[in-house]
View (cartoon, one colour):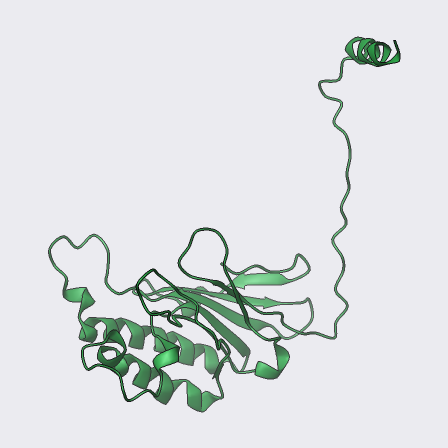
Length: 210
């Protein structure tokens, strides 16, 4: 999920999305200031409701869907905006660059996706900001499947990864710095007298005074 302050203007960028990949692109920013593009993704291992057909789980099929998403990302880059892309990539960044992994490991099988990511996105100045594991499960090695990419790392705080609820994934989040004045939401507390009964109230008060 992406949470934004009430002062921000938010616009869904339908032109950056399609129905072949789980991504949501938003244009977010303060009024009369340049907007940031924020994308939240979930990269599926395979498509749902396929029955016995598991062809979408092959590396080639996963790669084809991921390349479609990278096409979205490059269209976003072409806008010249600040961009943040975060979510469950199902690519373990803790294994990026490791050459001592078993040949049958998922990270080795999925290296074609990582190669596409590195070749097409990193040259545009993007940095992956999460540095700790984000997913843990009993009897399995902890992994870094949840990423936070940005082309303006100097404008963000350190990315935090905290447990929340019963998920096996941590929640990742960061603060975007700004010099603009941010209002504090006004909170009004009041009592509701919709079901107030004066007689019952007075009787209860009298009962305490005896």
